[in-house]
Amino acid sequence: MIHADGALSRSDSPELPSVLPFSFVPFQKAIMDLFELTRALVDIESVTNNEAVAGEFLFRHLSPLAAKYGGRVERMPVEAQRFNVFASWGKPVVTLSTHMDTVPPFFPLSEDDEFFWGRGACDAKGIMAAMICAAENLLTEGISGLGLLLVVGEERNSAGARVAAQTPRGSRYLINGEPTENKLCMASKGALRFELVAHGQLAHSGYPELGRSAIEALLDVLENIRHLTLPQNSLLGKTTLNIGTVSGGRAPNVVADEARAEIMFRLVGDAAPVREAVHEAVAGRVELREVLYTPVFHFSAFDGMPTSIVAFTTDVPTLHETWGTPFLIGPGSIHVAHTAEERIAKRELRDAVPIYASMVKRLLAAHSAASGKAQ
Image 1 (cartoon, one colour):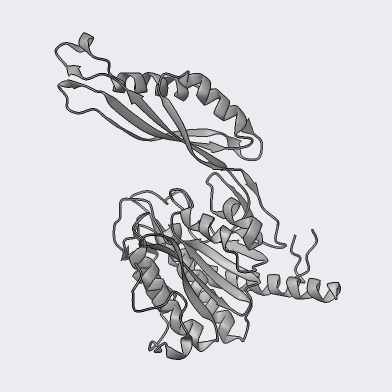
Image 2: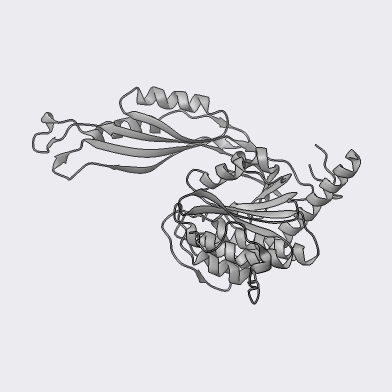
């Protein structure tokens, strides 16, 4: 827990190198303010696997801020045309982190007096803007020892976080940003995702007895999975199932020879009983591939801050072992994330900036106090 006094009790451009020597970086005229930055980020389409434009924007946006305050910014390669962006000022004791990718479908920014609307407004581009502005405010106060880690792929398989976890930068604390209505998260559900593939035999639909429908086989298995009794507990509630995608077949007059589905469980505890139940329900009738597992995560408290429990999962379980003690907090409501109504309240977005700045200060103070005692 962190007490009030800060103490602890328990797409690449080929002409630019991946780490920029800032004596050669031209200054931008000004760093965007919070709302300008949010507008610019939301208007960049960055659905998972298509984050390069957003990454390049962030790299170029952070470059003058790094140059001005003696920092550095780098592209952290993930795979072709995909990279994380990491900026730091001094040795990064505290790192602010969130993701630049969004779920589909993209829809651009609109706004009214109260809200910014658009894909990624709350998940997590508004959060990203607030973190960048908090970092700028801290730097203007002469505070260093902080980093910004902006990753790709969180919405699909944490590809960016996995790469970052393998290349740590010395951070001792990680403040991860997801929509929690500016409340500190104390626990988040885990995730278990499977792909199911059914195989059949092609036939003319007028003579279905001559074939074997992969779609019918898949539907039978999904029906059995839907009726599983799933674990629950008092803190995180029920394990839930979502059948996220279903596809298959050739044409309406052809018996389908292949069909597939992707399903995801939101876990409240150990994954083993859910895995076992799914395998029993499938009983070898279709191919079953586990493609993602993220465990339930319990977070540390931070004295004096309102708290919440969330049913989603994050990059934190992937990052925490190499990027430091994690905290999860951000403006916006998860209830509108991933929907056609995605939005973030301007007031909540503005409130997040001093929240992040205050947390960084207190964590830096805690680290300094602990280092002093160690000496």
